[in-house]
Length: 117
Length: 118
Image (cartoon, rainbow over all chains, first blue to last red; front, side, top):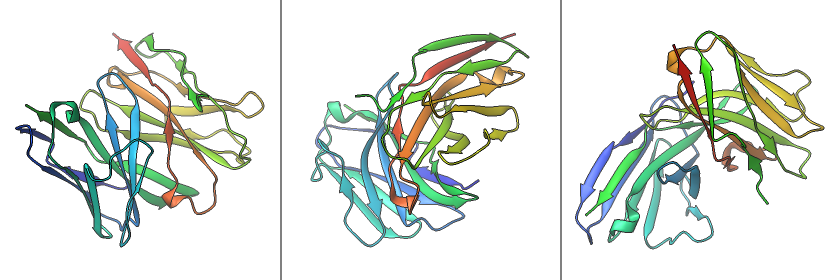
């Protein structure tokens, strides 16, 4: 399999501040990475698809100015939650596509738990 | 309409027994892929198994096998010889289209919580 890391694993911040979350593919190059949000006891909701060297594609209802995504290299994508508020508190998890065998499989990072006070 | 349906919010199984987690899907695309992921309490999503729509045989990976019934649009996960460490949330996911799939998104079901008892 492929390894994806995320940093930080958890963060607590004050309302109004911005928080940056990093997603790295450690042993492969990822042209495409994905950012998901997961509320407690719920499924994963895709927020955006991040493509290296181009603008991210956001899902309907996701504010692109609120959740800034930058895919600066083939191994790094970042998600910045700008002017965070308590309702942004959630579990954020990224994934990267890796071709192994017959198909591209999304491998996930360990996730980042964001708490906004 | 839900693209992925997991009707079992929770399942219990005794250690060393087999368990089947249900997943049905809805798509009109002839090419698609089905995935199962495990999410332990730590939160990480762990890839378990993949089945392509054109695969002739059911996928198997160690203790995991996928009971793929295309006509019924079901892709149930079978875990044999359950272990205590199998206790987790299990998500079924689908990707439509199997060409140039690296950028194509997954749609997830609501998950099934599996509890394995000693």
